[in-house]
Structure formats: structure tokens, C-alpha cells
Length: 394
Image (cartoon, rainbow, N blue to C red; front, side, top):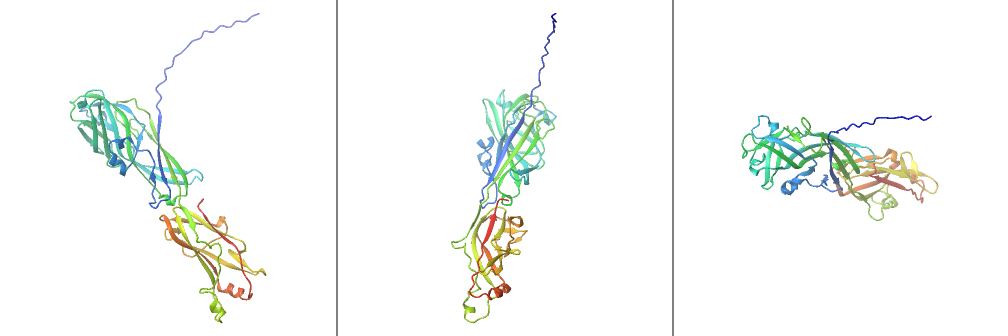
């Protein structure tokens, strides 16, 4: 027996709506340990710089991947039917260290807008030619081209933290004139404020913020907008911090001979026993960021490092640090600050200003009571090894 199965095959054609793209742009900056204490912008300059080069010498700019067609009607009662632009308000953005996850917060706002806008008809009908501008923008300049009819403009945002919409019309066109203005390029100037980089550990920090595009959105271009390149814009931030970090000791600093102030001669000549033994080791410091310091001891005597003679008699040595004024610990100056033992107990130091080729000192001291004990062992030599670790890998 054979079983036969028959089926009717039907087809339905679905017309998918256009997919609105999620746009993105990346803003980059770096700090390489310079004395300015500021980030240097490394973002490629925006398109507006081809016409307004002087502006780009003092501002940071970027091109946004936003293009669209905008229908404009000269004399319309609703500003949204004119050439119309609304920009986002100031935002706070958290950025995170790639390795540690440590966060910093920046503020970001748009300070100027530039677009290149073309129409198909006569130049005098252009909605931006011989412009009357209203709202929260101030015209800085424009560059016009007759064939094809094209205008590039630069507007300052008068209140970047909370911008009002901007709109305008060309005075040469007759009332009622309808044009399709094609926005071929959008670029902006922006301001980014963040903790000074000398207060940030070395590494790469990343974060992002997303803006909506469309009627009522963060970027709002008014009524009758078509061919919009995307419905959202994500701004990615990549900030690179690489600190200068060098502590330079003069030759011979690997050996610190402890002596009374002024040397041994006074005591050897029959004077009073010395009150203390000490040695100060100078160094030069280059540091533009936070770091930690701790000590490691060959011989531990309580919280201090020890020195020991051939009979295993040992005494503690206080190890302390003095740093230049641009570096602080717990909000205060670093003057003869005792160093703890071990990485777990390390002290953290923060840059108040970049420190470049400034003087500091390591101090080694044996106090009076311990000196008295050492004098009970004449002819002995006390030795011990102390390692002071300066660590910028927080």
C-alpha cells in the first residue's frame, strides 16, 4: 500500500519597514604625563574645520554620522516647519578603567553646530541663504555655493547645558516657498570636563552615552524629516592615561651609612654619646598620578626594619619619606612620613599638580634609646637591608 500526501503551497510576501540604524561616534583623548595636567584631544577634527579653521584651534570638534532631508516652508507659523534643529542637554557619563573597573564621571555638552545643506532649486531659494536665525543659537558664519545650491553654516549654542531649539529661514525666498533641504554633513564642537588626569591611575577608560534622534528626541530636526540616517547616536569615550613616574637616586644611594649628626668625631674625642643616628637620601621625582609606597625588611623589628650585628643584637630603624609639595597623602603635605611594611599596608599618594624633577628625601633614623643599646657593643657593625617600593600599578 502506498500512502500519498498532497499539499497546497502558498506564499505571503511581507514588506519589511526600513530599519533605522543606530549610529555611533568615538571621542578620544590622552594624557602622557605632561606638565599641563590636562587631556590632549586626539579625536579627528570635525568637518566644520575645513571652513572655520580658527575655530578648531581653540575647540574640540567631531563629525556626526547624521544626514537627512528636511522639508521647509518659508513663512510657516510653526518653527518646526522651518529649518529647525534641537540639540541635547548636558549629560553626565561614567567611564571605567579597562582593568580595574574604577570609575570616573565626566560631563559632556555640545557647544556649536555646523551642517552642510543642499537644495535642488535656485540658490536664492535656499532656506539658509541670507538667514534670519532665532532660538538658542548665534550665527558665527556661513559659506555659500551657487551650483549646486549649497550652504555650510556654523552656529554657537548660547546655553550648552540646556540648549533651546534653533530655527531660521532665508530672507531671499518668497513666502510659501517649499524646499527639500538635504543635510549632507553634520559636525559639532563639544566640551568635556573630567577629573584632572593626574588624579587618575594609568590605563584606558571607556564609557558611552546614547541620544535619541527624531521628533521630540535629543536631536530634533522638526517636522517632515525623511531619509534620516539613524534613530539614535551613541557617543563612545576612550580616554588614555599614561603617567610620568620616575624616582631618581644619585649613585651610591644603595648604601646608607647611619651616623650621628655631624659625624662620630665629637664622641670619639670624649664628648657626649650621640643622641641619634641618621642618614637622609635625596632623590628627584617625576610623578603625574597616584601611586603607593611601602617598605620591605630583611629583619623585621615590630613595625620597623631592623639592623643586626654579628651577635644577633638588633635595633629598629625608622624609615620615613618626604615628598615635593605637588604630592599629598590623605590631603596633607608629606614630611617625614613613616613608611609601613608590606604591600597590604602601603600608603597612597595623590598628585595635586604634576610633579616634574622635584626634590624629595628618604630618611633613616635610629633613636636615642636604641643608640645607647648599640654603644654597649663597641666594635660591632650593624647591617640590614631595606627596600622601599614606589608602585604606580594601583
